[in-house]
Image 1 (tube, rainbow, N blue to C red):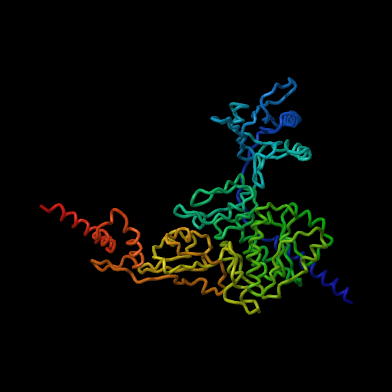
Image 2: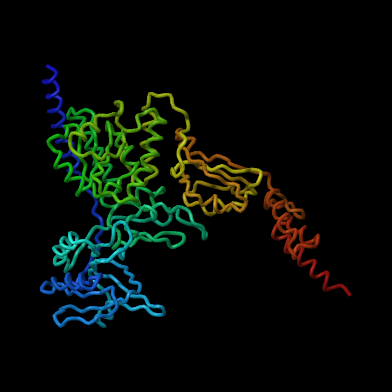
Length: 557
């Protein structure tokens, strides 16, 4: 009887899964833009002379135009060599660019030779680069499109087959969008958040001081920048967060309405993850619902937690062993924060987990290890705003928990939630922190000396801490669970205003005037009592007093 019931349950789950996948697929997804590449087949093979010439010569009769940059000093060449050859003579070789637009240079003591121009004075860029040398010219974890490191024979054979197809026009999605106004990278010459730069495996992101810039030609859609970004300034567009959320919500609703139970969402990429799933298809339990996404790193905590709020029993990230180190490290950091939140709410932390199964049986065991309790499914749609999406999911999970939890969950260093602590004995309310806050988490008192925090907005970027001239600010990562308290301005420090000693107008604080007097006491311009006294005047009175002082000096006989 047990076996019959189990089979019936599996059949019901299977049918529910099919309906769920169909429901998700029926929803439209907003298209993203495209990035174009044009390759004319100008190929440079860099490496030891004999290997490089042999490799390039095998491609002469294709649509490619191969040439060689040999790493040795100039040597006589056989008349049988059918490709142009330059020699680096042991000098430094550098490369930059991407498919259709590579620049390779050889640096001398006082000169830089452009290899493309040296081969053909009418040629400005190279289209493809094959690198047979060690170390590779490009050091990033994921090299640019059109560049092929091929130091061993196996790699050379694979690359040789691919190259003839890389002539012509090519397009790829524009994977990201960026809103500089909410970026926490920098303000007023100070550096704050750099999570996207540290996580990007292609090094497509560079700092421009107070904002970042993403090279769309170098970006290959890893998506970890969007997951790492605490403000949502950089987002993933393939698909965007709102469209993906709508699909997942519809999928889970359809699964539930069709009688499915304990849905486990299995997020996987379309290459290695999809192949692993194909191999394990027969062993995959019916309640595991595979969700193909462009890249595993492109979906972050706001989506994971929303899926739990929508009724998923578990969310698993299928790691097929192909994650770049920087992507893996950032995913682990995000998972650590999510686990702290779930544990703080009384839920089992492994209900969101990254798994590396070797086959379907191991995947099935991982899916059955732990599950969320049955919750009333959330009705919200994942909004475009990342922070809002996170708090909608967290608030629903907070309302649904049956555990006795605290009002605050302490989080680890690096979490993008928290408060700032102010040393009121040293803070002068100069408002340097307010002026650099990119998330509008800090506010002044407008007409009174006061510093307030809206904790919901604080992303722990550290700009306020860096900007404070008195070193009065420290960050405290945590999650405040009460939504109203999180959104309400909370006073961190306030003082009575200091009044001008001449007109009585309030213009500063006593601590600020005291600190200024203390710091300027040794300055050569403040060695007399009148100069120090003017520090205690408002701007208008200070000018008047200085003018009267100068006039009295000129009127003296």
